[in-house]
Length: 292
Image 1 (cartoon, one colour):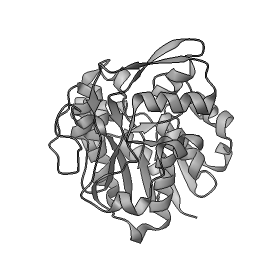
Image 2 (image 1 turned 180 degrees about the vertical axis):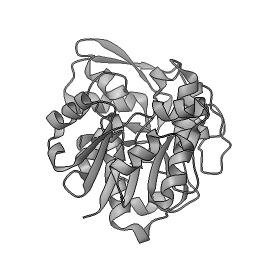
Image 3 (image 1 turned 90 degrees about the horizontal axis):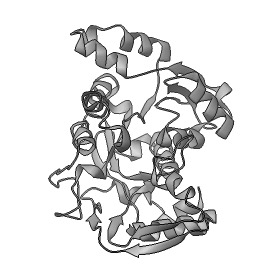
Image 4 (image 1 turned 90 degrees about the vertical axis):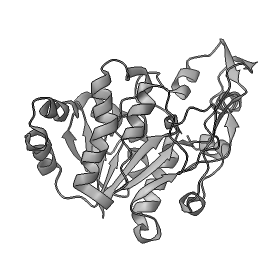
């Protein structure tokens, strides 16, 4: 059984990836505190079958602040505790709602840490980045050669953190969360009995967090069939945010009124000049939501 280090196992992305992989791989799960691991176990079970290592990227940041950098003790000690692995999935990141709390830390975790990890793990690492590296106002659809044009600290930090000496997948994700309501889906699930706007001219062609887990599984189980390094766009069919929330309403039975909004225009649709996305045969948005 292959051994996989899952960094950020309790976040929106990491928890979904865990659910997909938990019965197929020997996992090393990381989280900042045990309470989050307990939440993961209550929702998906099976945590006791895997190794858990507490990990926080901020002490690594502090090592660089203190001019220790790679000579600091925190990261080497963590790597020793995690042990040898066959693959690493980096699901650690500071998301948009928290990106301005400490911009320097955002730049380190989203921008610098991926390169540090890629330097350590190389081809073993699967890293995720975002369509927010593009402004969504001009130049779409965006392929891997498109000029990056981020508009905020989050997008800029992610645009910096795209190593090419590992497998970096640029996509956009939606999915359930263990706690909190920061993502689109969890926010929507709180709108029962309310009226909300559905942005008919805000276009998206990302994937669900569960689908990302399936993609990682496919790549790890058939490693020689897929690229090991480089940046690749992974995406599904194009939908508007109005169509997205309408599908959520159908799937989860939320009793809300969705008003069409055509004022907020944004188009971060991705395309590709590479063959990975075609090989992966990503399902439609509707199919992916039905599997949540």
